[in-house]
Length: 522
Image (cartoon, rainbow, N blue to C red):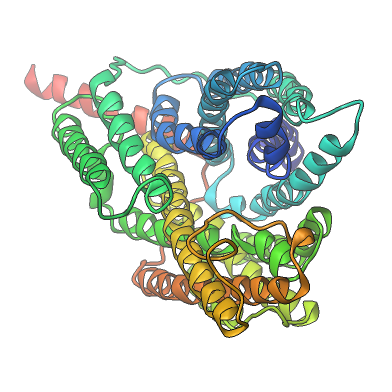
């Protein structure tokens, strides 16, 4: 395909990815209004967020495997269709139960978009040329991440629109993506001799992953880490995943082919993706709260304050991708990205309530530059080193473990944040001679800063500043482990043929082998 044909085909992919990112970010500032309007509880607030994340993370491997078996374009359009249905259900919800269900449907669709967009890119673009197109997806990621909370806040504050449009707004983009994919994406049909869907393995994987994700999401909030709920959920999750491994090793078409982990590159990039998820998502998800609570900024300003990190990610991913495409050398950028990400997290561990925005911007830009050089190129390294017939499974495994790492990091670091905030507030209130029973204590809710008297407000700002710095300090060793993992990845020349060309070649080689066997036998 020419560059023009590739860009045309990517237009639908970019629209679909924008939809997936928007689904997760546009409701961030709207959720308090949504929950209040529906008369729901704090636990419902948690489930509205968790439902989409659970469904997306758990179904990514399934979409990846299906892409190795069926028409990738049709699967992309199906996932977009599911997203449209989920968005419409969410927008018309008049009860929190339907809203949570609709978020599950949205999450399944978003899981398909997350996995399939990268699989299709690998199918139509050779690894040697793939790097320079990764920057375009970085731009879409940046726009969706920054625009989502801002758009959500504006929609909620606009009386003639309201929170329901936070869900409706993604529908036109999804329909546009379906139309663009139909018009621009041309993938040759590859006949497979036999298709067997591993329903039992799929069920066991989804059930086991969901049990563990529910545990890490709710532990520390709904129940203690050391409790019977923890024992039940972890025990069930481990047993289900052990059963899934048993099934996957004995089925003809496993959802996650375990033999891909015999590939050193896939194994190391998977571990690195998990650690990047913990460090990146687990650390940065609380930055908006730090901006609003510790620095006293509005939700809109807080969204704009994250621009330095997003711009750093965008510039580094684009530049590194262009250079990799020209030179074919990629490992040095993985190592440099891991080093810079570790430094960025270490710098952010020094912030407090008095840190200037200029210094904070530098720290966030450093982190963004490191993540931009590392995250997308981990996928490139894995895709370059697996057979074309396993591109979908390998790509989805990396996306799955990155999402899993983000979920684990968010939950664990969130529990650390809550405990440290409570401790710092109690200490500050006691030092000021103010009773700590009602203002700090173990209350995990975020205080309304506008209603607090000045002495208490300063104590709360200090507590959140110290606690947020601690999160980045805890996340830094994860980034260091990612660096050690990346160092052991062996650099191999980037292939100059696309996934579809390699798949055709593999099919031809298999046919020749069967013919040779037949001739020898006769």
